[in-house]
Length: 101
Image 1: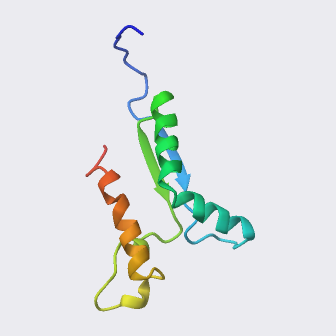
Image 2: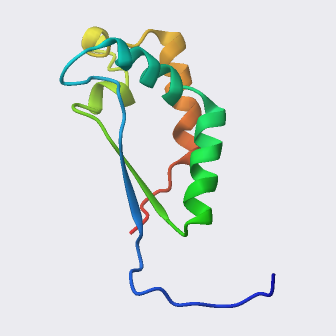
Image 3: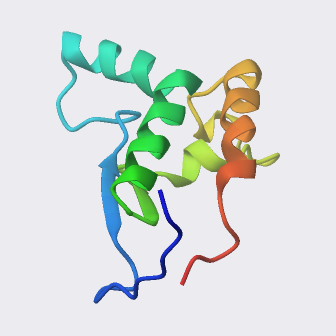
């Protein structure tokens, strides 16, 4: 495939992704979605799909994301993740840009 340069009309082509960490309604499907979102192979394929379709921003949404990002020393029970799960969340930190736009 020859190299070529194109200038898209939209600088940011975004995918809004609702993560299942705290759904409005819990259901058996939630467990399946949580398992899927914790699978690195899923994210590799998802990001490959975004690249193939020239999508350049992934926006992750959650009802209340703050408790899933940190563990406060003053309020350790504010997050429902145990230490092992928090390490899993930190694993994804390297994927996040400082500020995409």
